[in-house]
Image (cartoon, rainbow, N blue to C red; front, side, top):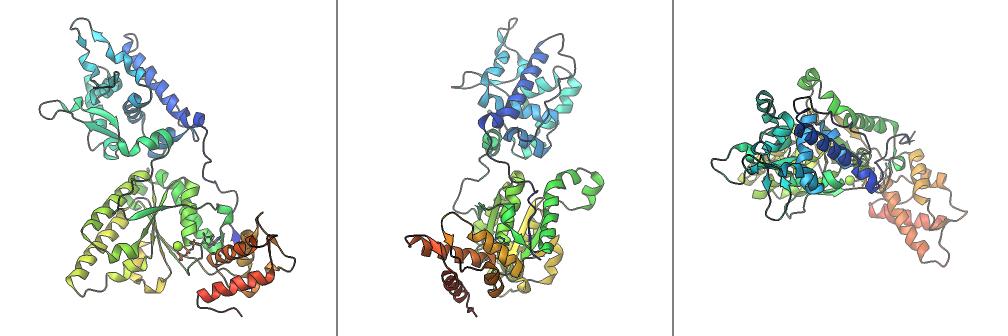
Length: 459
Ligand SMILES: Nc1ncnc2c1ncn2[C@@H]1O[C@H](COP(=O)(O)OP(=O)(O)OP(=O)(O)O)[C@@H](O)[C@H]1O
Ligand SMILES: [Mg+2]
């Protein structure tokens, strides 16, 4: 029997009010202020730093990023310091204090003054001063947080820019928030890359919700496992023993006839977990292997990794069958690129979904690459009845008395996608009438057209 997805599942968070958006950021700025005062006050300068505020769900994008990445207190301090010139520059005014003995700024504060910006611009030295004061041991220890291969710089959260090359010490590098993260930290937006002609993926979304998805219990159970992975993987991977045994990332295959909800389910997984979903049409990518393709794919994987995107690869069979044919040197080069793509897929630490209508065209040797392989079957009569009920519920048209949805569902084997097409058709029929009503004959006609389109004919 078909089941509706349970309604108790969490939905994507609703758009937040500006106040809620800024709560986490405001708290973090207060914390930075407390630390600056702590360091400037000779009575407290040598004590342990005040602890960071708690990260609460729903406190806006800044708190969400810190929580998702599991940033430790020291990393959070560096990040908020990098961001402060953008959001509360006056908070760094204490650093403009001059040393009366030398008539110059205090060397240990580090920092720069901008050409137009009148306030203080922090450098790596400033971060180290806040983290460690004058304690040499601690300074040496915390330097690794500011290294180019440290987590903050490597993920692009911060940028360290040594303005003048040459003999300047590396800690005099300007500390800035990473351009790729800035919008996401401040407003939660900016997760989409600037579209460039070569970028091989497009974001996909759905206006539908989890309750609209009608799937058989087995498919639903398997989708539940992916959900569990999305929710718990970061925690599992923190356990060193598990992290050694389990490969990061989750790859699964969605297979089944057209219109059975594969793309919809991928979109809903993203929506429910607040993750963007990017769709790559593999048939296009594989048929057009040209110089730039590999570079563009590399950029896709890099961005997806840092921004928690779900990758959805459509027409997956084109990838897994291509590798076996080698006729020309062109084929060989294509095979090399396919091998590259497979390797990146295997190493991808996030969720990658591959979809196909042609399971049988795929080499079985590739099965082991997937953590799960999920069939999206043509819906049975019960599922079709639910799909009809949901699809035809609206305030635009009225259903005539002669419409029998149980009968309709029993008589015609249609997928969710086909039922949506029928809906579009009868909407237009109703719209042309003085009173928008849809009759049983209208539905039969629209169904017949839909079946003819698919090369099938109504009984
Ligand atoms: N299982 C389902 N539950 C609810 N609605 C569905 C379902 N399957 C399809 N639909 C409806 O049909 C539309 C098209 O489905 P979708 O694009 O997800 O199919 P697909 O399996 O990805 O097809 P294809 O293999 O052609 O890409 C959906 O947006 C939705 O409106
Ligand atoms: Mg699809």
